[in-house]
Length: 193
Image 1 (cartoon, rainbow, N blue to C red):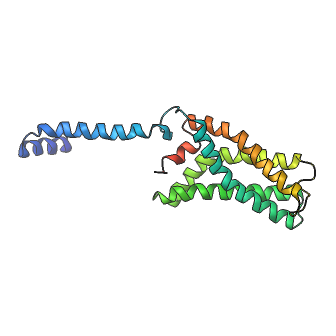
Image 2 (tube, rainbow, N blue to C red):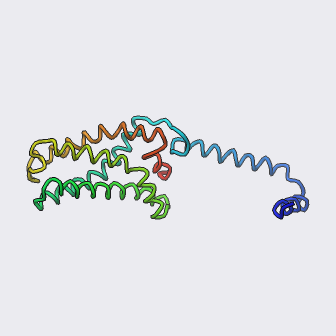
Image 3 (cartoon, rainbow, N blue to C red):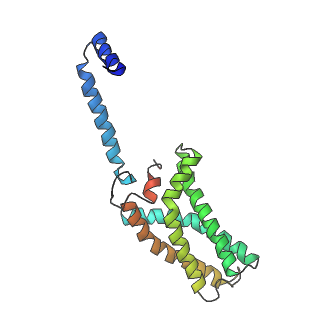
């Protein structure tokens, strides 16, 4: 007989049988299970239903971080007179930086350490940010003269706003698909209680 089993047996003999203890344990397990069931849409097992509202919210969250980085990169690159490629590289790098930073902020507020928060942000946002960046930069390049237009022009800001709209509309179904499979923003959602 193992030491653990001997200790448990001796403890039961010393304190008598606790008939209610087994029920209490089962109730606690059931409560934990019920609580876990509440978190079913958080990406722990298999596929989960994802609504368009949840997908829109996740995409808007992603767009916010991306837009801050994208605008900052476009403004810096354009103001410095950089070519389109250098400006896009800076804008994409800053979009990823701010996208991850915004996600980490919520996870860190939940009391998670920096390293784990970074892992959550990477798992939650990488695909969404990548799709958004490919689309919005593609639109900016496709709009004639948008990348060369000055910061004071309607063409630059109009093209950028249009690029964000197109990126949002294309990224939202991607996020819905990811969330439905317990990936993407479903990973970070578990920390936003």
